[in-house]
Picture 1 (tube, rainbow, N blue to C red):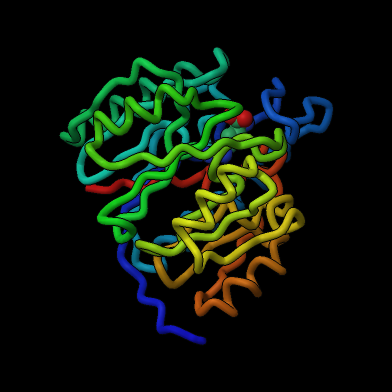
Picture 2 (picture 1 turned 180 degrees about the vertical axis):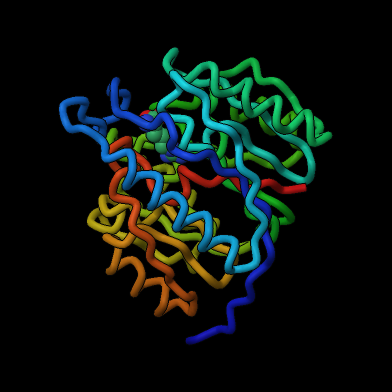
Length: 274
Ligand code: ARG
């Protein structure tokens, strides 16, 4: 079975790791005793940005802010669907101020922005499948985003939101264990979800590409796909082969420094959906 996978041009938002450090630990990947190579981090980030550009996608860049070392994980700043932005509200005080920087970006661009009441970390815990069931939002909870934010997002966005419970602290955001490959196909690591949520995923996506724990630990699920090209961490070679077997084109980029903060490709890239 080898389909012709069609790419679609995307618009992304990224933020350079100018002030990136690991000076606090809010997920199991962060080790404050191991220094980050700032020069390498920036070089790797630029390679990712240029890669997305060379594939024909538009990349907006948000200026990094001193004192916000996790801002490079731009996916967490908001979640947009069909021109409406559901803003983020971070779980940890160290990241709280990032939400307003994102808000300002969207408001300046003329987006309709809804400020959240509930704690949620943007695309870290929300994914959108425009071609599944008429437009479906998948949402994670258990570590960062409050389940109440799922209902709030549904009210703001007017799309059904399916709640999925994350159970493994190593995979604390939905985007570490689940990814959209195109408008209606997904990949995920079942073990990151509760047994009931695994059943929900199996029912909704019987043809999903299933990943294993090693794929998830290599941050192979933390990917960005345009429907054909799937950008993922260099370490995730086995995951790349699974995607190739499913008809996609894996494109590996080395994001070893961003992994020290507990993130990879997807964490660094927010998709803007006008
Ligand atoms: N250090 C960041 C945090 O723990 C990493 C965020 C990763 N982003 C993501 N979309 N999973 O909040």
